[in-house]
Length: 445
Image 1 (tube, one colour):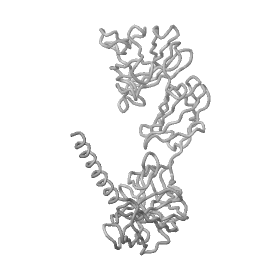
Image 2 (cartoon, rainbow, N blue to C red):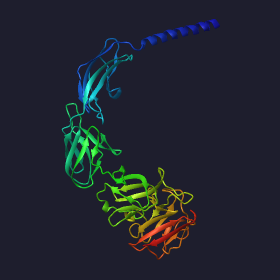
Image 3 (cartoon, one colour):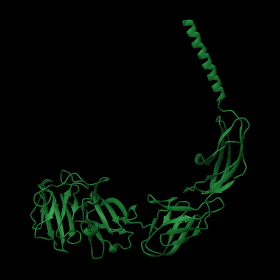
């Protein structure tokens, strides 16, 4: 019985082994004779072309699978087209030649790879000359009008018109040649990119006749306002904001450049002293600051820094103090109230010697009859001055204790009192005696 069972098992194993060998033989890899012939010789193309090709493919032994057209810039494959080849014959297709910035005219390699179902392949490669398309013109497309940008040099185009100081639009390039494509250039992550119609925020120091320019090789364009503070350049955050971080010295001259209508901007009296001749000097204690230009509200947000971060109040009373809450905002509370949005927290100017100050004008940067804000240790939630941390002897503003109409530490205006409209008030927080023994003074001037 045992011998009979063993014979059965051995017989089954033998059958399985034979079957397995036959299966392996049936699916042997890398066999056949795939052949490819380019029927439409290609020697040159433009960047941005949809390059047409035709090939004849065949295999006399094994069915075909795919033919791939691959384009290489040096050793980098930049694009590929795959065509299913179910039978021998002619196949046509297109492969896109990428239009990339900073790539000069030169040679590329067009490779065709034919594969049959056994995964055997054959390849053919061809060198082609690639050139930047010579656009006859470009078009600046704005919401209200389109402007023709004439060619003024190799890859360089310009539209010189009577423009406003700010012009928003994208740039369109026409199709060049039978295999070319129309292309758009727009604003993506604060740079100009191919394939976008997002508006590019061109800006000039003044309105009038000036050129808007674009280079189709480098993707560089102009004009964009370059704003400098003491020679340090602001970096663009978005269409309406730019910032710079730098060291500023107390009492030293402060110079802004690149803003034509600077005389129309609101200059924060906490951080800058404006002389009769219009020159500015810095009032804060010497240190590092982040200065953000708000082109919409036309003022500079100044915030104290420690290293690469916004400053926080330290245990010894140094650092920074911030305001979050209602009834206050620069340059006007009506258009830019802080509220409980911590991103809009106001930095008091650090005067040195553990004293911090904010200057407001009743009816403009602070409400005359209703305030509800408090002092914080940072620009955001966290450490804050509670009702027992601040005392004041002034007869208009009081500190909330949670029972007198304001939450603990929140400031309010006493019943029957108001801040006189149009009058300037200086709030000074003195931490000389410690962060838990702050003294608030409110003085009019």
